[in-house]
Amino acid sequence: MKARAHILVSGRVHGVFFRDHTHKWARSLLVTGWVRNVDDGNVEIMAEGERENIESLISHLEEGPPMAIVDNVDVDWQDYKGEFHDFRIALSEVF
Image (cartoon, rainbow, N blue to C red; front, side, top):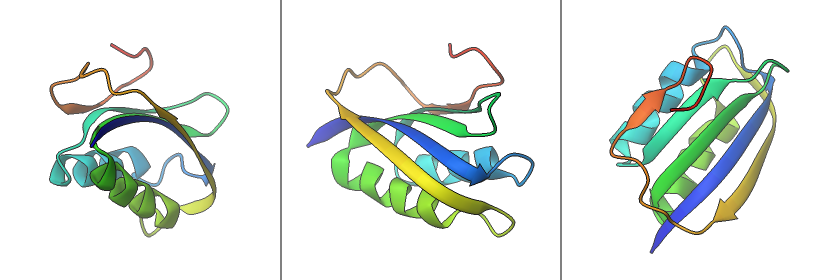
């Protein structure tokens, strides 16, 4: 079943290659969307794809890359829109 999730990851997630790892995990799971750093120190993700693949991505996010310390992963499940064609790292504004 297709799904969409808005995900906010908090903890020590800036400067530890979190976006790069998220990008690689999402692409390997055929999840589309984007990831970006937020000014408050969190990482924000919008993900679309098969719900089980997004759930696998969330499991990766909860663990994080080796240098990260993940305190919380907040997930807001939404209706699938089919808005994205690939998964990208957004620098600031979401495209």
